[in-house]
Length: 74
Image (cartoon, rainbow, N blue to C red; front, side, top):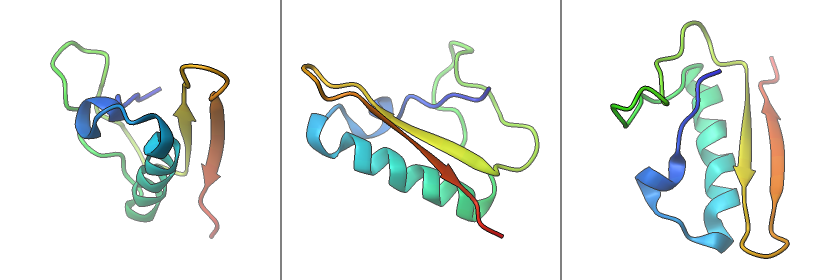
């Protein structure tokens, strides 16, 4: 599964991180592709095929964990 470490791109702000990840997931679905990898470690890999569903995650420092599934409606 393709992974993107969004905090590496935009920083690690606790409060807006979840909303930002949902916005990035929505953009990826709108373009039907995930944005390019930003690291050279091999953790982030190119995505083969179309992006049809995406997840946005947030990990809080104290009771702030969350996850959302964003699905394309066609």
